[in-house]
Length: 184
Image (cartoon, rainbow, N blue to C red; front, side, top):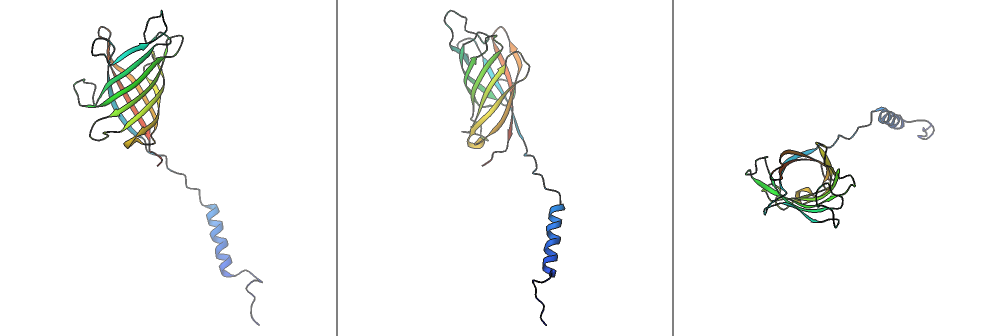
C-alpha cells in the first residue's frame, strides 16, 4: 500500500520547521551606526574697516546696528582657511546672513553657505542654519543640506571663537562640521 505524503509529516516539513524555529531564535541583526565625517575649518571674520567681511545691512530705525541689537541684519562673506592662521590655504567662503533675532540680544540666527573652492571639494557647498547663542563658548547649528560632494548632507556644526581682537573687530572662528553619510 502506498504512503500518502499528506497524511503525516515528512522529513521536508520537519526540516523546514527546524529552520523556522532557528530563524525565530537567532538574535535580530542591528544595523551599524553610520560613521560620522568631521571637517574642521576656520572662518576669518572682520567686522570693521574697508575690507570688512561682515557688515550690517539694515536694522530698526533709531537703534544701533550691532550683533546685540534686535532686528539688525548682517551680510557675511568670510574667508575659510585650513588652519587658524589667516595666511593658511584658503579653502572657500562662508557666505550668508546673520540676524540679531532675540530681544535680549543673546541670539543671532545664522543662515550661511560654506562654499568650497579647494581641490578636494571644489564647487561643493554645505548649508548651515540655526540659532547662534552669542555668549556661549560653543554655538551649535544644523547642517541642513549640501551640494556636490555634500549632496543630501545632514549633521551639525559647532562654532567657537578661538581669537578675537576687540580693537579691529577681527575674529577667527573654528567651525567643526560633523556629517552623517548621505542617504542617496
